[in-house]
Image (cartoon, rainbow, N blue to C red; front, top):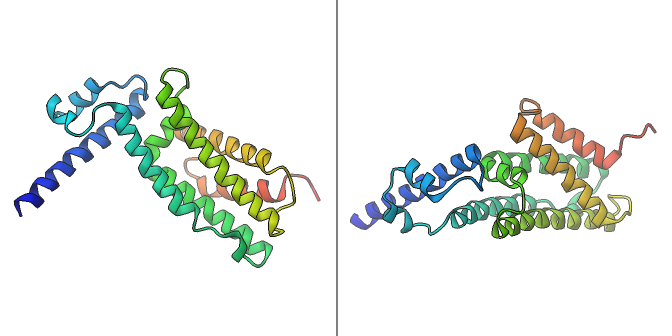
Length: 204
């Protein structure tokens, strides 16, 4: 019993550090937030803090790990090959967009860091941001290539399409998280994004 109480208190402090740091990253930005800021806002002793994390990069890594886990679980539920007709494929792309939106909402602070903090100030941070976008591009490319192979998507340069798709998604998410654009109509905009991607804007 005593051990379980100790473990619960340790987890409580760890969660406090993570939630406080996420808030500070959102308010001040990743680069401007210091360990001293985090310690002050959590109210923990410096020695206690260092029992959990040695630097803010470790905290950010843990946030990223949680985001990657959610993304992996959400995206890999989607299997292009099992959709027998065009309409069901289209509807499942919309459903996938909703899942991604839900994940971004749940990890709002870390996603905002990834899309809004400038590169160049911290090489380790830059590698993490690059890794995040590389993951998105490769996931998008894999889905596009499977779509082409199964006849769901017209053959095109899959790398180019994945870059356009993820670049547009990045700007969409950036505007939403930093300015509140489309805050009350995000689901409708997800449907429009899928429509633009799958059916284009040309009058037919």
